[in-house]
Length: 216
Image 1 (spheres, one colour):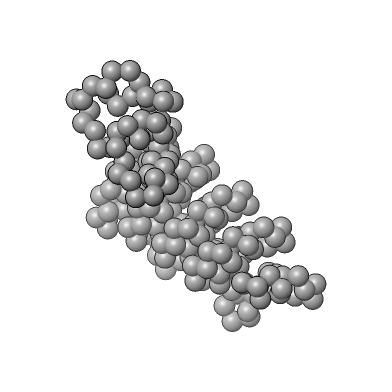
Image 2: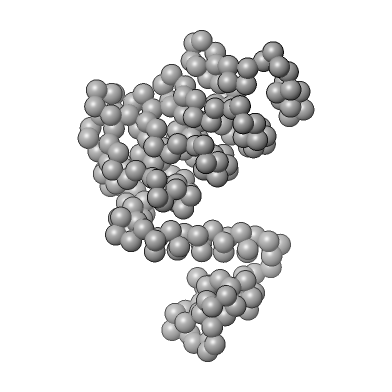
């Protein structure tokens, strides 16, 4: 990591230089090898082209989504410069390839971070190897990824409901993880203002919990 920092300080080195054979920039390589710390550091540099594509597999987001590198995907989606709808040479967008590969967590991240810009209806590009005129929902259904297909259908029907539900899910995961091994009891979850998936909907807790969330 120190070597990366030192190289970035050299004015004679272009941060977006790509090898002539495959057009892979240092940032692309970091994303494609799941180097989370390097990706996080390079994203702080305004000179880095976060959408610089490799000659076949698209942008850094394309390859991170394709391979299911969840932490890298998170970092890329948090950066406003990242374009979520760029297709690779085969015609697949990050959402499309995630649906084809059955990567539910990646699909959730794309929806949560970019609900207003995510193009649900992009089909594989005509004239490319993958072209079959299918949307992300089509390919998820075709490959038998039922959870992803159901999530996309719900997103189309009620985007805000799905986004809010996923945000709550991610908050729950993060908050429970911070409990350092303590079980997520209803009391602790109530303090956090989160709805517990472990509590039956038929069980009444009376007053709403912190943050206005009730277990009822």
